[in-house]
Amino acid sequence: MARGRFVTFEGIDGAGKTTHLAWFRDRLADKLAATGRTVVMTREPGGTALGESLREILLHQPMDLETEALLMFAARREHLAQVIEPALARGDWVLSDRFTDATFAYQGGGRGLPRDKLETLERWVQGGFQPDLTVLFDIAPDTASERRGAAREPDRFESETDAFFTRTRGEYLRRAEEAPYRFTIVDSTQSIEDIRKRLENVIASL
Ligand code: TYD
Image (cartoon, rainbow, N blue to C red; front, side, top):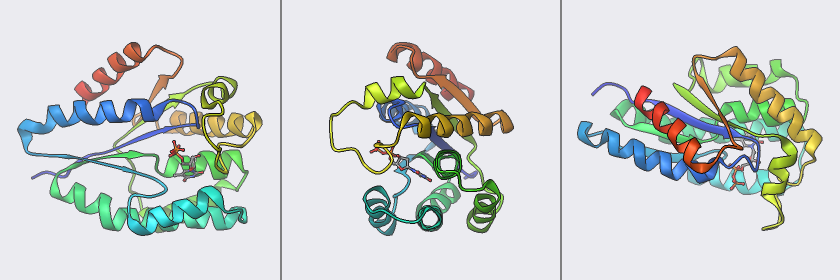
């Protein structure tokens, strides 16, 4: 069977991507059913037992910025080796809630780690490997922060300021501009129905 495809979902906290992921997975699985391929749904940081342990630490334990970036990429290396690469080689599709664009956006844009350091780690961990498609849920930081509300105890990223998320969003948009063939930008302020229509078209184009 031909190699599968790798699709990632991105956006700042509160952009609403999680709402759309499960729906996208089900629609994609329906479309692929006849071909014998399945959809593997996963997330970063996480996706493996080691990755989920690192996620706990990354989301809750204070640390140096470079440590944070290194741990993100360590979790990613494991994720690629244990989950993503084997699934794509089997011909399955992989749908990941975040990937490397999040590191450029959060650790690079948000926290200010120089881009060339991240590019070095990216080359080391994934060579030239990139998602086939990245759906970026775009929203203004103040709207996103209203949406996040006070539903639960915020983690180390969710508790960041609007200024942090303005930089994070800016880096996401910069990356989308740099690689337009891979990115689809969805305006997160649209209704759920309108976003689904848009995603339906994205699935059809795949
Ligand atoms: P997220 O995936 O949005 O999960 P939830 O919706 O359950 O909070 O949370 C993961 C957090 O990790 C998110 O705030 C972004 C951050 N993150 C980075 O800072 N760098 C990365 O490379 C990745 C993958 C995530």
